[in-house]
Length: 185
Image 1 (cartoon, rainbow, N blue to C red):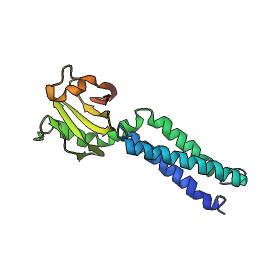
Image 2 (cartoon, rainbow, N blue to C red):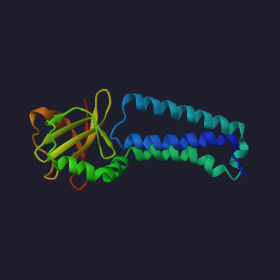
Image 3 (cartoon, rainbow, N blue to C red):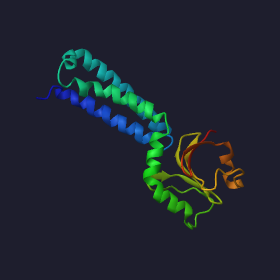
Image 4 (tube, rainbow, N blue to C red):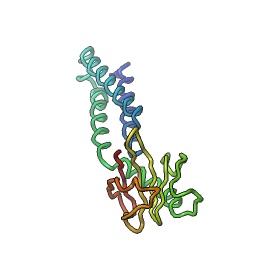
């Protein structure tokens, strides 16, 4: 018997919000509209969850209590996971073949390619090339940019003029020749 009844809507929406946060974090950076939408949705879900918990306190004594309690638990876990490099590393691992083929290929793109394209599971907004190093900008907001860098020969020490913005980047090693970068403005 269904112990949560119509409350499954709140649980399902919370699970969907959790997946959205992790997917957003795996891009490297959420844009401002996406961030505002996630914060608004989290606030609304939190208020509805607290209100429904007060209106139907029996939900904590029923068999559905674990599903009901999974809503805030998973949301909190999603926030914690999104603060790490795990989501982007997982997406990177799933897209490695496509990204590596693009980076090692003889694509006619100029060194500072600015047209969006799909490479693997990423929507790449910009590409910078410097010798064997290729930077893929996968996330940006009003001021900042983030993405993954393929650097088989190590991090570039002096990027070319067209990618001098990489001088301001902070790099975090993901695995192998792959790095995450964040460029504050």
